[in-house]
Length: 300
Image (cartoon, rainbow, N blue to C red):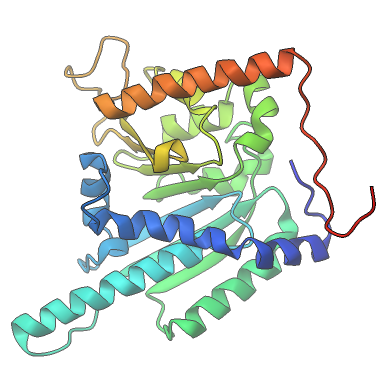
């Protein structure tokens, strides 16, 4: 796991990897793209949210795990603003007047490194200034410390556990692989408890540069207490999409092992990810090691 204790390193990361804010925004926008095939539960779960323009007046909460410096809020705010604007234009065509949206979206950023707080505030201010949104309909807070290698009820995750009953969408991007060893040693206790105690109907987005760990996540979803309804993949496995059952009891349509529903396309992808994991393990056993990145301009 990279160290972000240095303020300069945090600032450099915020600038260099700002493009990552596009990943989640693309996921939202692509739900309107007929060239992408999303699980029906994913579309259903988002249709009633302000992210896709619903203005039913209900508040919608997004929590970003390992989310410094606030990229996931930028993604959600951009998608929400765009969809809200398109919705208001449709209302104008029907009624002749431009309606004001009553959407309310709030994001909370949690991270292992508490030094991200000032950059999150700066990111929020810049985003809302650019989007010209001075109303409280879009808001974001720095929530504090979060450690995905510990129990969600561990003191270091106190801020996270308080959000279990109010969060509609949990996002964890590019934090799983770098913590893989500790996650495996803890038997994925954080995510196991997160899936168990999240409110019914909750959506989850997990993003990684490679899909080798998704089979292990799918295995932990077999736990009868997880009550995960459906699972799917996007961008050839770089994103894992999940929805918790909207009721407390798994329906009889699911398997006797409480396996969440998986389309045939996604089942084939899961089998491919298992093969990729085995191939990677063989490389490690054979002595393969990741090379240190070369610094441009440096002498050998």
